[in-house]
Length: 75
Image (spheres, rainbow, N blue to C red):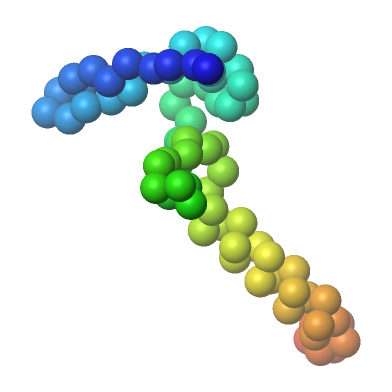
C-alpha cells in the first residue's frame, strides 16, 4: 500500500505523491489527476478523466450505429 501526505499549499491543501506512486499512475509533475467516488464510499485517484471516457464511448457507439450517415456527410 502506498501512502501520501496532505500539506498546506497557499490557502489550500495539497497531496504529496512519492515517485513510486507517480510511476504507478504514469503521471509527472503538472499532470491533472481526478478523484472519483468508489462504490464502497471512498475515493479513487486516477489520471483518466471519467467524463471524457464516457463521451468517447457514446461517440464510438454513434459512429458504429450511424456509419452510413457519417460516410454520406463526409463526402
